[in-house]
Length: 459
Image (cartoon, rainbow, N blue to C red; front, top):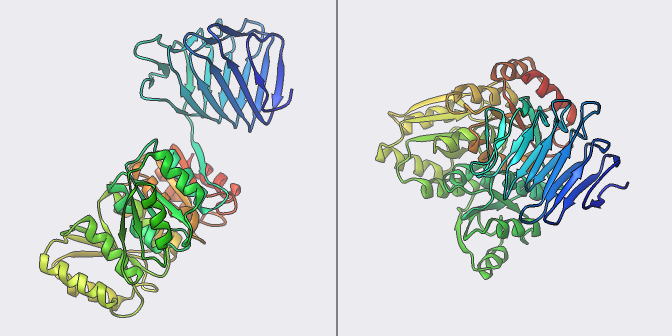
């Protein structure tokens, strides 16, 4: 049978082996029964089990002489509706390994009898009406599952699209079913989006990207899906055009634009919109993205401002004035300079210390951007205490721009990587022992071989 075929009603004696997409659907008030001589296997594809309206149920029944009826490996699975699985004490009817599982139960429970379900190394997402508890999926007003076998494992999930705009939308969809506010930045540069990570996190908003002149269709559709009422644009009309702003306003969205004459000025406008009297700050080099990205998750979690510094002995005039203003307020307790003296000089560090006299200022740096990334994660380890990490390429910025706020929502560290892991990276990952890895971007940004190395080091 070809992939993507829609199968309805009762099934007996059917065998499917596919790497494509399979949907089993019962649309009536009845039972769709998958008998023991039915064998469905998919690897690398998608399987959807869907029961229809009201009381329709998909019921899988095995016996003591057969292998699992449904076997899924390295795939994506959706269970939509009321389901029953009966293993009769033998091999499980449904066996799912190394896969992403989404459960959307409606009228009744996801019911397991005599070991009918087996999930190994799977990431299982459930709606609020269903809970994972003691290894069972159950619905409070339904039937509790029994003897379900769930083996936890290290999950790797890649968030990506065909381009940077689709990748940002993919990251948004992973975190948000709805959002009142969206932060919009140019996908053609990194500075505004990275400075806006703490702002987006504070507003419970995803960061979406657009080309400078015309609003990307995939971005506009995501704004609609989220049901957003407000869009905060980062950067001037050279970054996000007046035409895009007008398109948003024509769609009855409230639009606020935060911008300065330069990336340094825009970062300050973002900072001022967050707090008139900030207590924590991050300083990062304004002409490269790596150090700001590495620190963005921690900055968001601590409500820290991200301020850019240039090379040389003194900051630009607008940043210098802003630092003097903060000193007069006497509000900044702690600040961190991210990156080595090759990007932010010792003289610049001394300038900041002299201007913010009384503020405790430390530098967090490594020999390169990858070691700086590890140093940042160690510095803020008490904050970055989630069980997962985010991985981004250290050689280009687009796919990772939306990753900072996503990582913050999971208290996750961000690791920059390229080629193969260094000894320092391997040591950090082993100590971190994450149970989930999110990869920002496709294989062109973060190759599968690198992901495998990260997974092995984290195990």
